[in-house]
Amino acid sequence: MTSQKPTAGVSPLFTVALGGLSHMLRFEAERFDHTSEGEPAGQLVICREGEIELFGHAGEWLIPADHMVYIPPHRWFRVRAREPVNGLVVRFCQNEVSWRHDGCWVGPLGGFATELLENGLKWSFETAGNRRARCFFVTLGDLVPNWFVHERILWTSYAQNSAIQRALDFARARGPSVSVIEVADHVGMSERTLRRHMQAELGQSWREFIREFRMNRAMEMLRKDRLSITETAFQVGFSSSSAFSSAFLEYVGQPPSAYARAYRPALAKQQVSA
Image 1 (tube, helix red, strand yellow):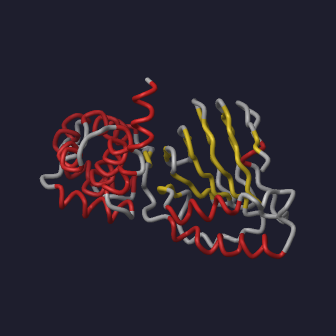
Image 2: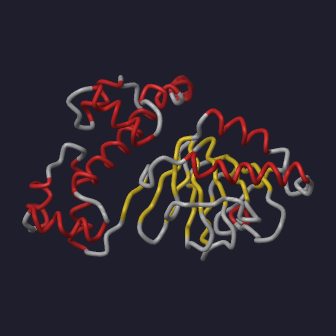
Image 3: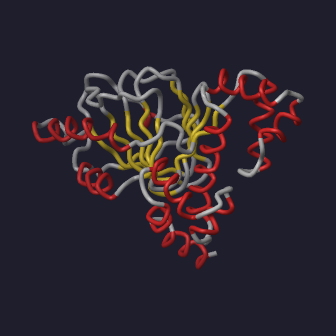
């Protein structure tokens, strides 16, 4: 299997040619920084080790290890890695994905997806020109939209209004327990005005913003810390682990215990080598 090594500023890795043969490739790099005005076909990017940052017009995503992002065609994006990273790219050159979502979505890499993608590595650019390969990518294209549960997973939104951006920055700095009154006072708005502007700017209520903030912070803590599920729940503002587990399952698509379990071996290995 051919492995590409993109470099900073020059990365054909995330370029997709419409009408060619759909294929997969493995990549590894010390770092890269690539900007596209929009590719003519979609691609699935999987991070296996390290972290990838993805930027769009309205916000940015973090793609940590064992997570994936689908980048639909005709959308401006910038993708960057500032540390050693490796992963996979699926180039859907025939646009086999019927993407019914709006924009890029990020999600954890499940067991079935992992096995299917590893099996698909045999269909590189050099070997993808046969009927079995075409059938594989058509089937994969049908499955991909179902692997993503929520549009705002690991997402940080931008605001056009500078006051609302200050409100978002303040809330994120204070943490998941921050109240709407604290944020409104910080930016010199009434609570009602802040709520109205947030809905207009972000398309979500204050309650939805805090829920999203808590879930994304919980995902980070479960990946990087050795806290229990109950401790994590309290840290992100839940009063019970059961309420947290239900909210996490609904948002991420898997229980927090399963999500954490996928990262504990890697975390232990990092701590031993440190």
